[in-house]
Image (cartoon, rainbow, N blue to C red; front, side):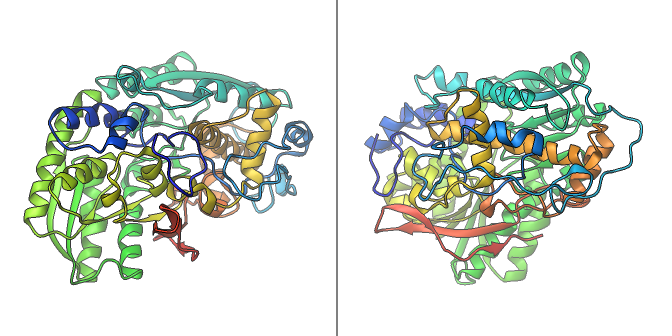
Length: 517
């Protein structure tokens, strides 16, 4: 593993991402096709695992209910994330709000027909497997499996009264990035959740957005609190009103954050020759045409070429993606592009191919790609990496560990709960899955506090929409989120990040900006 100054972890920081399932096999395909891959990149292909993305976060979270605070915080001392400066290991509790909710949350919703408090509830969780990575000798580097994290957090809740008085019966279903057809995998998962177990909600990380899965949950009346990256566009939330994205914005807001950030910082100007690398997925195409292109026109930017690669629906799409990206590089280069808009592993594939052609454009990305994730993967050639500019809301993904704030209340609460069950995260993926699972549980708990413990889907949905800006996430920048009737994606702030030569790493601009509404 290539060591990078300014990064304190001992292994590659690998995590889950909308394009993750394609990365390992696709990079191997790139090498097999004769594309030049750096020596460091070749070494790190073996440890890439599931892809780019997340690690420890460091922001405040919702208060623990009075009947659970003492027990889950007892083991918090010394549970801080590696590489996080200023961590005290302290766990804090906030004041109770109306109806038993945390301060600032909506008052208890009047009871109606629905599951009463103190009745055990089934909650669904997706346990992501990465058989395509393992088959190539790759590893995520995780020391704790997602399933163990889920079970530990559930046990911590149940040992201290459950979630707002409900004992949790977890229904854990495996999904696999290595499956040839992800629709089939997610269809089986939905059947298990809705027909076999009748879960009250599905919580936590999902490795991709699968429309048929959301349609199935919606038809069954099951809320989905999703902490994955790919969550569709704004119309997705209109179509599926019980879907909430906790850690990431819609595709529309992602594009607007990137473009507005680029213009505001003077990095995207009218004199630039801009190219775009986008997917053929319907939600991506709609967001590009409904949000990105109108902004590009309004700002007077010169978009000289747009290249489209296929919409991945399974690991069988690996080879096709590589060929499409390689072809796109040739076309963008020929069109005189100097700055490229893109996201995720396709940007890595593009950079590897561009380096072999002696072409060094600038790249504009967001937390969906992550600067620190690029550095610690070691896969992008350094000569290309220094030209990456980002705009992000996930500190653990965006910047070097030394540039991140210390874990605060929500992260410490999460770590305390895990430690009370004998689990201590070590590697970045351990922290990522821990924090995203906690995120969904914490928000669901906040919703039940507002409903008085009732789990009826319509009440839970209304409660989350009524939270506004009161809920703080263990994942997003500053922990700040906002939910409402017309806003089901939580993040609200971002910071620009860029390459810093003094540490050979990515660091934040210290000015926090508001994301587009």
